[in-house]
Amino acid sequence: MKQSFLADRKTTNIYFGIFAILIGLGIGLSFVVVRDKLWLAGGIVASILLVAIVFKPQWGVLLLVFITYTRFSDNLIDFYGFPSIARAYISFLVLVIIIRWVTFKEVPRGWEKAIWPILAYGMISFASAFVKGSFLLAQTALLDFVKDGIIAVIITVLLRDTQTFKRTVWVLLIIGILLGGISVYQYATKDFTNPFGGFGQTDIKNIVAKEKDYRVSGPVGDPNYYAQIMLVLIPLGFERIWSDKNRFKKGLAILSFVLSLSAVILTFSRGGFVALIITGILLIVYFRLNVSRILFILIVFVFFLQFLPENYSARMETLSFLVPGSATDPTTEVSYRGRISEVVVGLQMFLDNPVLGVGYNNYNINYLDYSRRLGIDPRYEYRSAHSLYVEVAAETGILGLFVYAFILYHVFSGMYRSWRQLKENQENELATQVVAFSIGFIGYLSAAMFIHDAYPRYFWLLVGIAYTIPNITYSKISQNNLRNGLKSHSLITNNENHPYN
Image 1 (cartoon, rainbow, N blue to C red):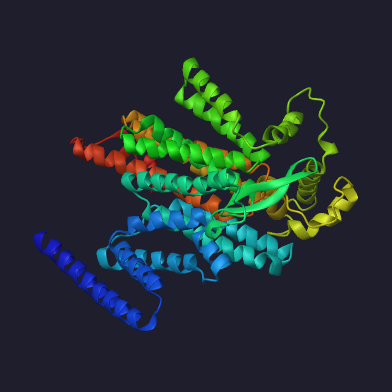
Image 2: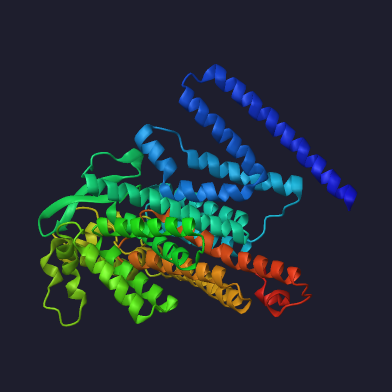
């Protein structure tokens, strides 16, 4: 055993030496080739970080989450003309997994359950585009799907312990501070022309009736999708405020919670507002907030109402038609008439093509043919489904809808079982974090009722994290049992509960 350990350590030192030599040669070459000192410094830091990730791959998943959630690579491409950093980084992480597999005998585990549903949905999407729709139109979207699926699988391989999961949560909360802080600053200073490197995009869009104004759009460039991704962070921040005993961390969580919530409001997204209410109700129910705490929250909310942007309440009042008995007629507003048309058209596409739909990413080009016959939407332009679930049904038919629903069932049932196991083993803090992530994911899916899947990478990122939770739970409980000297445990030794089976 000792000899094996020394051999492994010797091998590690050899590879570390090789990488050190390579990084040294790279830095030396950079001094010759790169003239800009700022870019040179950035390159050196990035190179050292990449070498560190080879030996600490858990750090790699944290950086992947940051790059993906902030659309860091996309913004560098769109605003500065950079090549794709994300593509190169994903390839690097795959290489790291292979290197550690071959060199350190770390067999990738935890991805088996994730890859088959993702692969099935990809094959159905491919078939729908090839058989029913325009394959050329779907080609770019399918290539993006492949990258998104790889990201989800990489996360299931690298995010495998409690500490990395908790650090991932903190990365998301820091993103909330970064993006939410930019949005609040923009409204406080009225500085809407500065995109802040792509992380603070804004656009003049409809507010209410014919009135238009700036709406914050974050790194995605659309206020509705920005509200959707910021919703995920609100329950995570709330849970850290509730559970964390460290004052500094609790303060960061409060800041992230407030700024993320503010960002959702400043988008003026009505779908985001409905999803925010659903998220809030779930938080109140799970954390069992008593009457005094609920009243305190309401008082704080009423206090902050005076700081809300002008016409925010007027825009939200247009949702009153959702209340039973309301006299509001949604068909009097052009945007609502468009949304109704887009949903009805999507359902009609599904009924006309029930098996494979009209083809992956083919809703838009088919919209006008249907909308003319329907006669609700006066706009003569290509439109999207404006509902993720209608879009999936219309484009991939019953087969795609079934697999998509199975993926959601699979991840949420896995998180629910993990929560029960953690509660039974007195791992209450981790169990609460699992619930907070689940509520954030539900918030994302609630907002998806009103918008289509224009930025699917966020969905597959969340799916990847969700798939890791049963593996993390298994690892955590196993460690506890070993620490406590337990030789057997019903939750661990039972093969049915093993996440890898």
